Every structure is written in structure tokens, then in C-alpha cells.
Image (tube, rainbow, N blue to C red; front, side):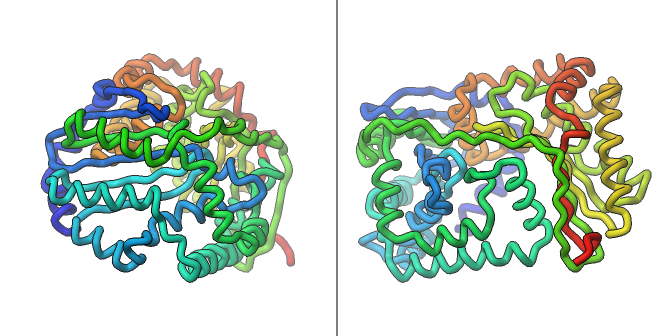
Length: 437
């Protein structure tokens, strides 16, 4: 692993210079079983990053909260050939890494390996075993479940996590997005190994899978690897439509006492999904409003001018469902009301007057500069390509993005914010010592 990291560090100068139009060079095809394949030849360093994504996210678990994540976690805890410790030792010997994780819409497996055949071939064999021959050991499962339950209990000791849980419970009740730690804990206790095996059997299939390659690999090799992975996953039955997530817009104020000199505050409202036409003006506008750290308008006013917080931020969560526009900060208990009112006033002024041209130009430059850092490695490029595939965006999206960002006007950004953000209709979550016991 040390050799692999040294190789990455030695080539960092090249990786920083990767241009956003790299994704437009991606070649695509379908496997016999229906998996979509995306291949980007990047021979500059002898490393391959591969991501395999299947339609097995938490939206598929119904009321069995935590099932998708637990299943993904168990997939890399050993195979029938190698127990957990031997599996990890073998990966270390090969200087490779294999990871798995579940999101709302998918479960993804990633492999990073040097492309020297003596290292890549056995690394791929391990990856194939992860997909089809995971051990699902009872003792390991009990340990992982206990840790997951303890993690949910630990939320009660973290005011920022309490605030986040109350926030999503308020805006997205009766859904996996709004599931509380108590709901997750109860569900985890009821899960069985057979539940995990059934979930893998039903949803880990090639029909809707996406396979991404980025690195020093020939297309013919990528074709053979993708075909084998697709065959291993198999063509299953057509899956039912994903469960819908219906937001609950509300200007409700939720307060919870927590013994602390600081109070955590979250404010927000359901806003947009990733397919919304206003996505780009909102993201760029928010970069100026609250997404660019110390230089943002919220930071300049609420921190620097008013001295009400050490940090304040805002962001849009735009995915496959109508995610929220969120503002978050912590402040002294005695300053909560003032901080909330002044934060809303800053947002209202931004919406009413629109962004200033000069400030917007600086935000655009900063935003575009950050895109390079978002794709400065094979792994980041692979995930960027996977994101394009997930939202059915054109592969030249990043190539055309700079001109689209540059063309945005203050009026367009102002209009988009007026359509989707209203400070008077935000839910407000307050967790801290400001509330009486």
C-alpha cells in the first residue's frame, strides 16, 4: 500500500492538471446481460480504478432500515476461500484496495490496483469473489450489527447529529431519508443474515448495473473484465420502481435541549432534485451565498460582521429526490434568536437584490477552479463518470460546464432562488442549552 501511495504522490502534479473534458473521451457499451460500461483510457500512471454500481440502495430496503448498508459492509469481510483477516492481508500484499458502500439509490464496489499483471490479475480474482462468494460469517455479522447499533446510540451524544436527524425527520417523515436513529436501531436488531443474502440475491444484478474503468488499461481488457462481472452478476428480473420520497414543506420550529454552551441550528426546506433546470444557477449562486467558506456572504455577515458564529454554511442536496436547501451554524445559547433572524435576513436580501456582478464573477472562478480538484485522480474521475451515468447526463457535461457557468447572469440566479428558497417557509431545528429542560 505504501508503494501505491508513493506512486500517487509522485504524480500529483500531473493529476492536478487533469482537465474537465476528460470525461468526454469516455467510450461506452453494453454487456450481454445489460450492464452499462464506461471506459476512459488514462495511461499516465500504472493504476486502474474500477467502480461497479448496482441498483441496490436504501430505497430498496423498505422498512428494513440499514439493510442495504449492512449488506454492502458484509461483502468485504472475507470470502469462502479467505477469512476476513486473510482477505485484508492478501489485499495489502497486492497493494490493492476493495471497498463497498450503499447510498440512497445504489450499492457500489470499487477496486484500485496497479496494472502490472502479477498484481492486477489476482486483485480482480479477489474482486470477483467479493461479488459472488462473500462469506457472510455469523460472528462477523453480529459484530458489525453491534457496531452499527452503537453508532446509532452515539447520535444521542452529538448535538449536530441530533439536529440533522430532527431536520430530515421534519422534512421527510415516513421515509428512509427521515428514518430516525431509534427506527434504525430497532430495524438493525431485527435483521438476519438471511435478510442480507436475500437482498444481495434480489438486487445485485447486471440489468441496471454500471461499470466504470479509468486508468492504464486497454479497452480489450476492460471489455473482458466487464463481460465477466456482468456474467457473474447475471441478468435478473425487472426491478420494481423505486420507492418515492415525498417531502413535507414546513416552517415548523423544533427545539430540543442539550446541555451545552453552544446551540446547533439547522434551517431549510425541500428544494430541487438533480434533474431540475435550476440546478446550475442554484449551485453557483449558493457558492457565493454560503458554499465558499470564509469568503461567502453568510460568513462575511454572520461571522465577520456580527460575530455570532465561528462558521456558517449553506448547500443544496440535489439527488434523485427533491433534496433540501440547508443553512447550518452553531452559536452561543443567548445568541440563537438573533443569529437565526440575521441569517434569514441575509438570505432574503440575496434573493431580493440578487448577487452583485463582481462578487459573482469571483464565485464563478472559485467554483470552476474547484472542479479540477474534484477530478484530480483516477478514482475521482471514475466517480464523476458514475455520477453522469446515474443522472443520465451527457459525457461532455464537464467539458461544456465552464461556458455554462460563465454565461449565468445575476438575474438568472436571482430568479432561481426566488422559485425555490423562501426564508419564511424554512423549518428550523434548534438543539442546545437555549431550550429549558
